[in-house]
Image (cartoon, rainbow, N blue to C red; front, side, top):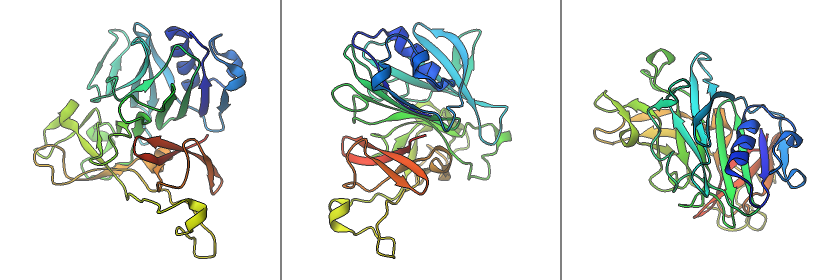
Length: 305
């Protein structure tokens, strides 16, 4: 699912929350959203289902918990609490489990509850871009500037493949992480709810730190002018660089090695900088992608579906 969700000036926290959760849990018509949705300015594409279900309608004040099954084990779930209670922000708090009776979760992914690394909302009329499938949720806001208050970046929850021998569905480690793409720049810090440490003990919170690796490419000019990215037959193409969860040479923190691939499940990639402006759309094969920015340039994209 892709939605350019435009809310009206003075939209309420409750209505923005209800609309976002409704979109993530299968809504196919903007006209069914609250009166705070500017239907004429919004866009909804549902050729790929969002794939999440409501798990706890009373997670907290102005907060609801949603869930989606794992790719390799449909009996276990990813949990995200969508929370608009903090004025000016929409949180996507990522948990390993969530008890819908006690309204509490276990192993909150570090920084997923931070106002610095979530998305912003406003009392003016602005937009929130949402990309979702059963494998991931990515949000990217605009409130006069793009993205999170630190790094101007998109953020969300992303599921990965399992590449380590110990990382099986039976072992029970959650194969997903909270990512704010500002943190994916440079040192590339991301946070799963729980993972194996080098000492073989479990890491949670700040001790579950891992790295989002890829091949970083800077385009030396505009895409049309330089033509340095060629397809070998006289044309040009945009390389989609996979996002890999890894951790090497990290002492007693995370277990070293390549944990898995986010992009193959979530259709979110790194792209060369200097090619697109923020929110440009481009085709790769039969798929349409939208370019996303951070404070250091337009360097990511997500599938418009």
